[in-house]
Image (cartoon, rainbow, N blue to C red; front, side, top):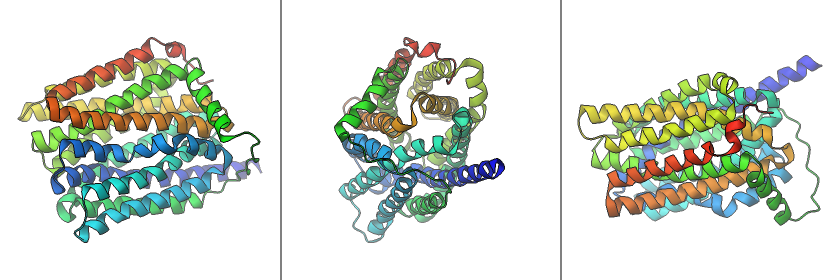
Amino acid sequence: MAGALRSAARSSFARFWTAAALSSFGSAVTTVAMPVLVVQVLAATPVQVGVVNAAQFVPYALLGLLAGAYTDRWRRRPILVWASIGRAATLGVIPVLWLSGVLQIWMLVTTLLLFGGCSVFGFAATQSLLPRLVPRKGLVVANARLDQTDAAAQTLGPAIGGGLVGLLGAPVAILVDAVSYLADAVLNASIRIREPQPDSPARSLRTEIRDGLRWTYRHRTLGPLAASTHVWFLANGAAMTTLSLLILRSLGWSGFAFGALLAVFGLATLAGASVAPRIGEWLGPGPVIILTRCAYPVAWLIVAIAQHGALGTALMFIALAIQGLTAGVENSNEVGYWQTQTPDGLLGRVNATRRSVNRTIGALGALLAGLAVGLIGVRLTLIGVVIVFAVAALTAALSPLRQARHLS
């Protein structure tokens, strides 16, 4: 009986893992196609680029806390399935509008708002379902495997995405992502897991949301970690908006070259995720998070000084390789730490709370970057990005997180 249960658990995680891989591959294609669609096809202004980048994250501010509470009230697998179906439908509208000749920036923003609404519930369910599929002591390894697969998709996906953009056009390439979410929904629907129906809570949603906020921000180590991560997302939202404008407009790279750059980022992330569990065991999750946070300002300082020519191109690839390697090492250790420090009954709320604030601040960073590029230019905006990344690192380094050397 025990062997059969272990076999069923492995099968369920394998389907969950495969579903995540397929959707990651599709998303990697969109990572190339969306900036090309916005910057080159629709000729968006810097402010419009910031608005588009922010659109899919705005629903986190509006729905994130509610999504977390309902994720703890409902079964998590059906939430994940329906969220993937919703994301497939919303992305599928974009090529239809473009082929009809009516696609405009405001339509794209509306579609991404709906996509973001589905993503709020989908991500809350994803990170909350995993601890029911994998023993807690294996969560860092499980998250590392997911990160490795995601990195592999980011390595191959942008290269193929750049080719698809050149062959079919950016809007049609986005259809690949829509199909990947449909496959994601089918696979997750087939997971064999008995999720108990949560009891109807006697407490109000307000009380449940407050419990999630308290655990997130009053915990000795999770509170400072959450604050550092929020600042990181502000910097990253600004960085990615500025990067697309720098690469595709200021430096004049092609969509294929942009895809190759993101492929290097994915390859470096894969390498980082491959060694993340070992480094986490060696140093502990807290020191790993702090050290990796210190690498981000270095990477973006290199981006800020990169110019035209062979040297500038080489520096850009080096910077994105540092960014990817750092992210690969950090992510599984950070997510595993959150999952092991949070009771199962609070996972939905805590995951949704921090993701809600992270994505909201990321959207703010994207908007601010769009405005800043228009006012002070790309280079000065990137210097601001470096400073904010440094603040995120300092927030973590000066906290009790440096003493967190074990998952338990």
